[in-house]
Image 1 (tube, rainbow, N blue to C red):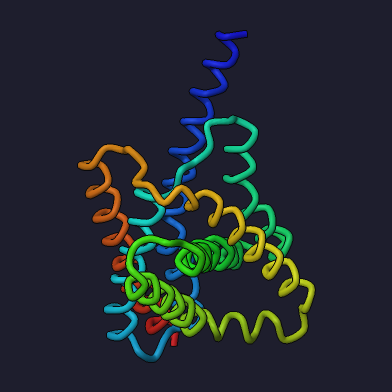
Image 2: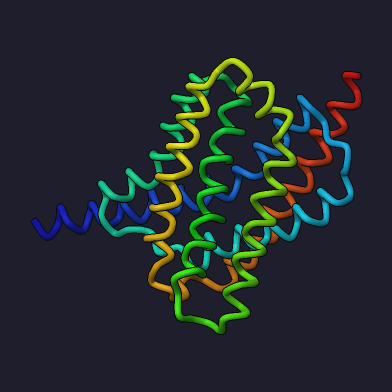
Amino acid sequence: MPKLDFQAERWAQRINRLHLIYLGLLPSLATFAVLRTHGYRWMFPLFIGGVAMVGVLLAEIFAHTRLPDSLPTSLLVLLDGPVLALLATRGRGFAFAIDSFLVEGLAVWLGIAALALVSDLPTPWQRNASVVIMLIAVGLSLSLFWPYLRITFEDRWFKLVWLAIGVIEGTVVRFRLLRTEEIVPRDGDFQILYIALLTMAWVAAMILGKVWYDMEL
């Protein structure tokens, strides 16, 4: 039994690492997908706001999300968002990447905002600032993905239902994972590399998606 427990814990750690990579790549995949298809009018504000928001998202995911040690729970946390996004998109390529990010990204930001509202730490103005920043992040995301959402939801209300369920469920899960309010002990050098590389990947995805869209006009 101890050997089986050890193997399960090792698999849970591997799944958690995969989860961190998956969450880190989602902003890039979704941004490329929506810009390639719909473009975006205000690219410079998107660049400034996007770099800041993606950096915050990655830092929160890496430094403050305490992923579970249990193998079944690790699988649940990894697969809940993709499964609900899959139910919404029914597996349709780029739409799956966008919906996965809407579920996971909005859940992280709303989870942080919820935590700031109920936490006693740090100071009140810092908690209020966290709520405002997270709401700005939500607004920026909805602004970027609005053309996709408007077209998609025009005659597919069931998709909106699945996405709403995903965001609500994801927010609850993220809130619980963030609830410890502690820095998760991980490699500091790898954290810097994780944030820097994935932020640069987002910038590259933004540029490539917009160039692709312009070339097809």
